[in-house]
Image (cartoon, rainbow, N blue to C red; front, side):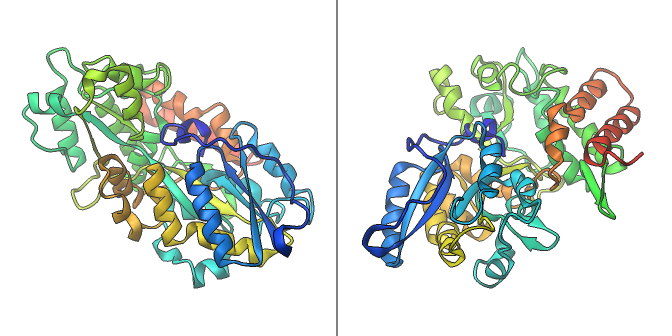
Length: 419
C-alpha cells in the first residue's frame, strides 16, 4: 500500500530507526529487531505492546525501529540481502509490496503457523491474498483501511433521502436526486482507478489475470466493461474532472468547499474536511460502497500492512512469536481501536463497531481485494494505463476499443515477452 493512501487514516508516531540487530540484550535476553512503518502505531501502543511481550517472553527483548515510507522499498530489499545477523527479524510491509520481496526466496514461509495457529480462514482477503505466493503464506495480515462513501447528512435530508443506499441501483437513483439545485450528487474524479477496481471486481472481472504463469490485462472482458459502465454513469452525476485523479485537486478541499453531497474516500479524510470547513462538523456520515444487491457491500480496494519474516533472521521462533502477538486478537483489536483501522479478521469487526466510519470500512473490507499479486504491478502504476483508459471513455471514446488498448499495455508491463 502506498504512503499516500495510508497517511489519510493514521496518526503520528515519532521514533527514529535504522537497520541492524543490537549486540546482546538486557539480562541475557535475545534481541528481536522489528521494523514498523512511521504512523502505523502510536507510541503508547508500542510501549504497552513491548511491556506485555517482554513480560510474557522472558528470554526476548524487542528493538522496534520506525521506518519512513519514502524510500522503504530499496531499504527493505537491501536488508533482505544483508545476510544472517544483519537484517531485521520482522518487517512491516504494505500488503501489495509482499510479492516483490518474495522474489529470490528472501522471506520465510509462514504457512504452517498461519494454518495451525493464526485463524487464516478469517483473514481479510485484501490482506491475505497479496501475502500468498504459490500456496505459501509469506505476509501475515496486520491491519487494513479502505474507501467508503463520505456524505453530507444535511444534503441527503434536503433531497428526501432517509437512509444511505444499499445497492448500486439505489445509489444511482439517490445520487441523481442529489445532483440538482447547484449541488453535485457526487464528486468522483475521472481517474479514480481504485474505486473503478471495486466495480470491476463486483462484476466478476479483474484488472489482470494469470494463466499458465503469464499475466495479461483483462479490462476488455465483459465483466470489466460492465464495471466501467457503472463508473461512467455514477461519475456523470457530478463535475469531477475526467482527466485527473482524486488528488488533483485534492478532493477533501472540493468537498469542504460545499455543494458536494458525496465522495469516495477513506473515512479519515473527514477530519481534513472539517478542518477546512468547520461548519460541516456533525454533518458528515459514512456508508460502505454499495454492492449489486443489499446482501453485501461492494468490493473495495483494501490497503494496509502485512508482517513478514526475512529468511535470514537469526531466530525464526522469536520472530514468529512477535508476529503471532502483533496479529493476534488482543493486540490487533487494540491497534484497530487506537488507530481507527480495520482489524485483520472479519470476526474482529465488532471491535470497531462504535466508530461509524471505521465500521463502514470494516463492512467493505470483508469483500476487499488488492491489486494483482505480481512484482511487476509497480511498473503498471508508474504510467498507469487504467487512468488513461478511464479518461478516454469518459470523454466519448469507445469503451471496448480503449479497454483493449489498455489491456495490451498492462500485458506488456506484466509479461514483456508476450506478443
